[in-house]
Figure 1 (cartoon, rainbow, N blue to C red):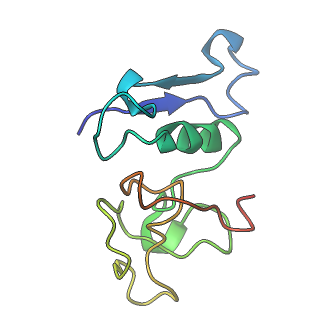
Figure 2: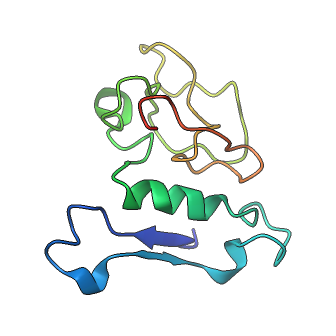
Amino acid sequence: MILLGYASFPWECTKNLSNDGIVLLWNTLPGIDELSYSKGVTLVHEVGHWLGLYHTFQGGCTGGDSVSDTAAEGSPGYGCDTKLDTCKDSEGLDPVKNFMDYSDDCCRNSFTPGQR
């Protein structure tokens, strides 16, 4: 898998301000390519990290992203399978429409109230 971008977490910048920020692969921005990740959602995702959010699948089915209203997700979602349920013992389907997942850009469109 290609690294589309990365960001520092807010608690990391106190240790080293020169590493504070967001880095993106240039063709993840809108209007450059017609790839699955070229609608600008990578920037939204990385800003989420920069503001302190983890991936929706961060701790798998038992750990989660430390936000109580995010459904558990055992592994990253790819594509846009809205019926995916990688944590059968937990309530809700995988949050593939969440900005902090890895689904295609055309699929991701929301944060949970707790993430906001």
